[in-house]
Image 1 (tube, rainbow, N blue to C red):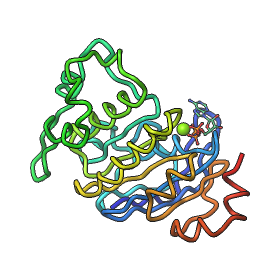
Image 2 (image 1 turned 90 degrees about the vertical axis):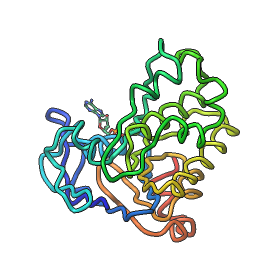
Image 3 (image 1 turned 60 degrees about the horizontal axis):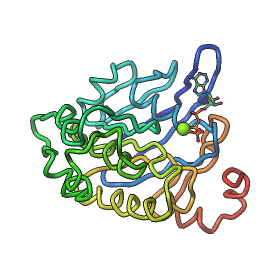
Image 4 (image 1 turned 135 degrees about the horizontal axis):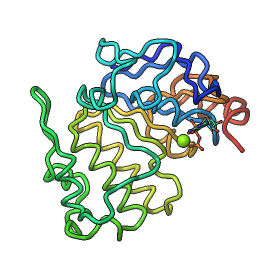
Length: 232
Ligand SMILES: Nc1ncnc2c1ncn2[C@@H]1O[C@H](COP(=O)(O)OP(=O)(O)OP(=O)(O)O)[C@@H](O)[C@H]1O
Ligand SMILES: [Mg+2]
């Protein structure tokens, strides 16, 4: 569904990604694991067209998307949940979802009801202002907002970072559930436990380059690789 092939991405003169390649098949949950500053967010921003790579290619559903504007990439079906968890603080949950909703031909429509079906906790407090939410509630809302743009592919950037263990466990359950809603997921994580528990396959990024990839079962057993690239 997604094929990233040899991309090089820069911030100004800073050469951040070095020939990064990865693939995600329809229906998979794939994680991109790496330490602080490894290049996870830059990879997601590259896919989304927010920081377009200077070299390489990106195919989404067989179509080249490198150089395509972010809003067009979003229309093609990629939803992005950035690590900033930005919401419109002065609007209610309901209003935040309403302004994100978009309907497309030929794709299952995510409406608010469906978002509330995934996150019943949000429905109970749907008139509350987004600026007054806890970290976990806010993360649920940012995921629900990305879903309201009606994607079939979701980029999740460190969705559990900084949240309490119980909230992390709830989110892990919800992310796993996304698959049953027909979504394919690329998940950036520093938290190995979360990533390995959720994913089918993993890529490890370090210093802007992919150092390892394989099934999560293999990674669980490969302590040498985890020690080298993941433990701080
Ligand atoms: N806007 C920017 N301008 C210049 N350099 C940047 C910018 N954003 C990130 N970088 C640099 O790019 C590298 C990769 O950063 P990136 O945010 O992709 O890492 P990350 O794996 O997402 O890390 P984290 O776990 O902290 O979110 C880092 O060295 C970082 O300092
Ligand atoms: Mg990041």
